[in-house]
Amino acid sequence: MDGHPELELRHLRCLVAIVDTGSFTDAAIELGVSQAAVSRTLLALERVLDVRLLHRTSRTVTPTTAGVQVLARARHLLTEADNLIREATIGHTRLHIGHAWSAMGPHTAEFQRRWHTRHPDIELRLIRHNSPTGGLAEGLCDLAVVRTAIDTRRYAHALVGQERRFVALASDDPWTRRRSIRLAEIRERTVAADRRTGTTTLDLWPEGDRPAVEYTHDVDDWLAAIATGRCVGVTPRATATQYRRDGIAYRPVRDADPVPVHLIWRRHDPHPATHSAVALLADLYREHA
Image (cartoon, rainbow, N blue to C red; front, side, top):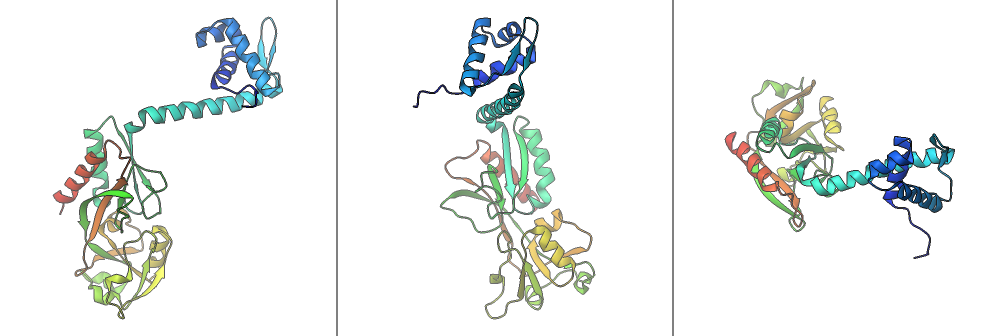
């Protein structure tokens, strides 16, 4: 330690209380301390900052120019400190579920409705983040819906369902007149694929007999490429239900393996509601299999 006094949150709370109540006496009442303690705390803050913060007369208390600036920062810091405390103490009253593209697909709205009914004390938030873990690796969510390969050393996981593959087409593509498309036919086209978060890889086709690929960056980029007609896309049913867009049509791929859908979470730090979320989503996929 260098011997200098340290800034404490109680110093900032004291300053805010004095300004908001308009007097040292009322600030003392609000803070539950003596008027002398309020005076000492303000003096300590002025010593830490080496600046005068308040003009004091017998009737009024007003911030100095420096005091106005410090007061604004003090309010911000106190809000952040309160948020930190609240998140730490009631963090489990929220459940954040991340996804890269299409959440729970056709089950998204029903999942939200049932969750609210069954767990009214746990607020559900869905977060879209274009990363392989749907924001889990980035610390943005407690669970993530993924349809791609999983790092099982790092994440715990549960298979909740499977989704049929669809081909995405420009709405004026001749294939839209057909009820379904075969995988082998698609290799004659250029396929739009997101190598970071998409479910489609060239491994769907035999080596040496694979389509040309145009790589895109996210779902919006992927849809834009397909809408031009220069590409088609292969995607799980979830995309077909979540991204109904003008200029885009979807048709089932009749002979492709389905896409497994997993929920993943941090192996050593699961949210208490993890297994409730897994059970609910698995039920929805099972009901609509």
